[in-house]
Amino acid sequence: MADDGRRQFKRVLLKLSGEALREIGSHDNISPPIVESIASQIKTAHQGGLEIALVVGGGNFWRGVSASNRGMERATADYMGMLATVMNSLALQSMLEAMDVPTRVQSAIKMENVAEPFIRRRAMRHLELGRVVIFGGGTGNPFFSTDTTAALRASEIGAGVVLKATKVDGIYDSDPHKNPDAKRYDRITYQECLGKRLQVMDATAFSLCQENNMPIVVFSMNEPSNIHRALIGEPIGTLVTA
Image (cartoon, rainbow, N blue to C red; front, side, top):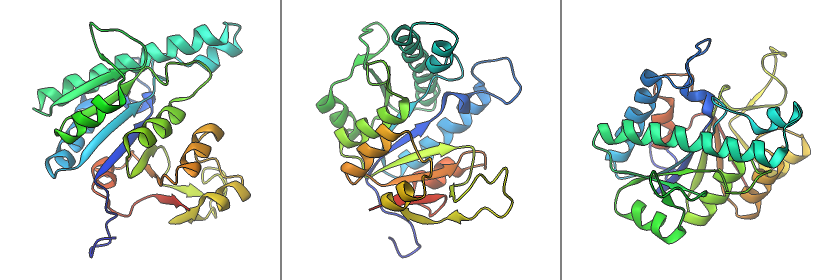
């Protein structure tokens, strides 16, 4: 921790849901003002020398699990969801580059006309050269969530933390929407999360973080500037560590 209480990280991976890019109640899949706000916060943190990678979901366009539950073959539904993540990645890239932030999109599904293929060493070199890297296309495999993608890519590139932006301001001992007396944790261990059955990420993603000793910060992105605050290491949300 720094003297001002900030968590010190050189390289971070920010995980955003696809729904984070759309306005509540809007029929538009992507809200340019919201994307602009996210990109602006990333730019400010990036200007401080932070190495930033992103994983964004595709739920504003498509949810593979939901489509599978309605009768679509699961692998096909998941591949469609992966394509949705690439669309969101391109939207973020476009806004960041409009703000003069050098950005690269790497896709786990080959589509050379719009994105680089995911190559671990190339991604790390982009980060070292000051470029923001956005990982699209999930893991390239069906049956895995974008939470798992975030945990996997963070481990592969040697990130210091996974920052998970959510609708709530941290991890609680029960649902804060149902229990007004729910307790929020400032800090909690992997074992405590498992013992209390707290849903931080899906099981595969959480196991990857635990096995690789990858800290997770769960925070609310609904508050103005919270993405920037999380990126620069302000102690917001809940920190999950060993």
